[in-house]
Length: 308
Figure 1: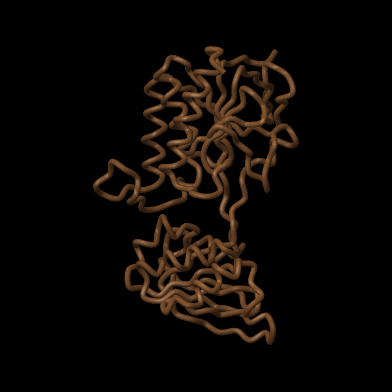
Figure 2 (figure 1 turned 30 degrees about the horizontal axis):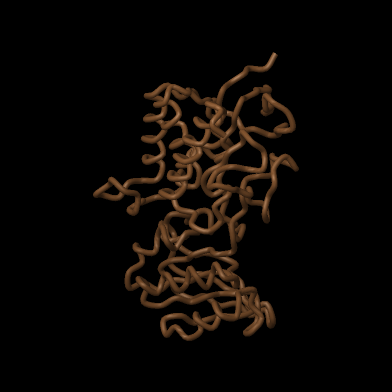
């Protein structure tokens, strides 16, 4: 027989843990499934300097550990498993892991999104040591430095433009040829007009070079096969994010993989709520995820009370 809970939260990033804190403090003790990456994307981040309340930078894993302990302090229970499939077609809702099935009166999905990487061993080795997938998070650490942004879409143009506030020089490396990028013409032209930004077209990064920090990158021209090494201080990957929604199947309405919402946190199924990067494709910040987690928790309270 499956265990029955009032509220199940999926995910232990800022959204999931904030929701847990609010619900536990309201005596609606939630059960939280940690998922495949406990702590979310912040668990792989080094210095966090833009989360309110910390005068000094805090390490991402430490910030998430503090949030978790705060949730535990108020009675939140954690299950170190990943939900692999769900059935939201009837109530109570059913959720399965590889070892068990649980049911719940309501669910908050805060499984986040994962940055898409180039798939290089050298890239993963230097993540947090000059390799980043978030200019807003880490741009500050590259004042007066030379950085590279990889990508040819609007995200890459936005990241590059943002980095010009700090970096001395920003180079965009794109697979597409000049005039044939995925970015909108407006975004591409704005980047081209910026004196701090230059482009290397029809190319890709094939190796990130450095011991304990990024020193340079090796790039390959896809038209003539020529390779060259350029010296840089930082590498920003801007080829998109993938929301962690595969386990949902067709149980909820999605938009390009992201959960569709109405009234901030409500999904297409009454009683199922969401918060954070799994639906928020625009901001993708720890503080906004925490805010959505708070809203989801308050909405769950109202739902359980029969207010909506």
